[in-house]
Length: 178
Image 1 (cartoon, rainbow, N blue to C red):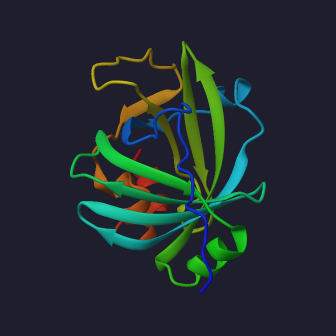
Image 2: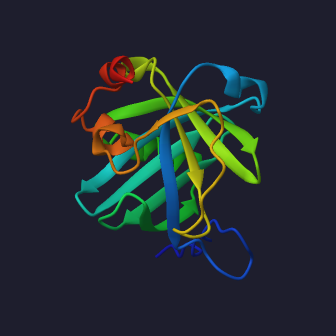
């Protein structure tokens, strides 16, 4: 019998694993954000399990890293999140078992007024959709909104990666509605 080491959770600090995800999502208007963005990283993302209150997803990054993430919770603003680095070959194998479609996007990090915004530029069937997310330390945080974000879509399930992967929403059509 082969024994595998326990995976280590990705965390914001050495002492506590990241257990809560608190984030807000916005549509992006225009290209002004690109002035401040990093070089971006390609991401392939798929869901292994997807239910109303939980999901298990796998991501493979353009730099060779791979992660598996369990999210649990009913609200879009706050959910429990457990994320672990995994072997890239295992992640590739998991993609074969994905339900729905593999999401392809490039994620850029954009600093603004003490927060790091993540801007996802979708490719493939969702080409044209651009969404910005900001992670918060508390539900009471009120980040300064950059002038390049548009309408807030936090909690609108059609803008979730899970809905797009499962074919419940069409990212390209969502872009036209923005």
